[in-house]
Image (cartoon, rainbow, N blue to C red; front, side):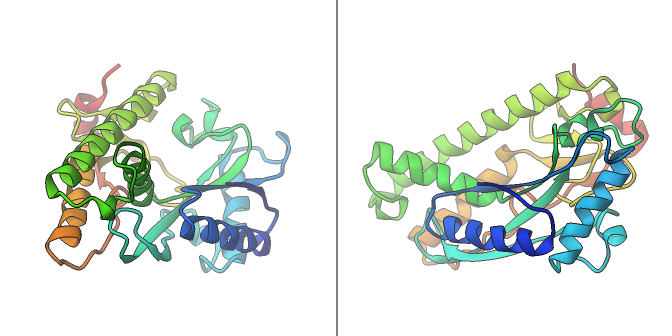
Length: 263
């Protein structure tokens, strides 16, 4: 879902429309584009402050300065899980994207967080993976995932989706790796493809300093999420989505960064 927003009120109004689309299992992401021109801001910091103002105005932070200094916004949506059919809370995370992040001379150069416009991208990796499971279930079993009777079929479906999610993530990271002109500002896969590094912590809203963080790949978090879905579907366990996929990264010391970069 894409909307143009100029202030926090417009963001909240659009977010509620997005919430309705998520509840109906029609949308998985919300891109709020903030109208501006290339000459409005001199650098990424100015752009981030503008985006921070909107989110502060929307009530998600105490101040723009606090927000763009590595604060995470988690917006809970209480919805029907697309996999289990049970009531569940999935958290959606807004992240700032700006023009100057693609400018090599900018101190906050980070092409993986750049866009040809100012924008706030709100997503939930866990919910999006759940929607992939639902789509493939309807295609191959002609029913909702929670209507699949055989556990083996359900587990096989989840395994296929987790594998596809891993492959898509690897392709995305490889693409962003190639476009970075500065190795230290590139995203990269680990040797075993179980983690990826980035010059930022995902999914914090924004940062005013660049530091490398390591994050889980789907081969780790998707498998964990699948186990939760299986337990909820066949073992009567309570389902809590948690922040699988967007739980945040671990800081990587400078001396450990080089070994994680692959071009």
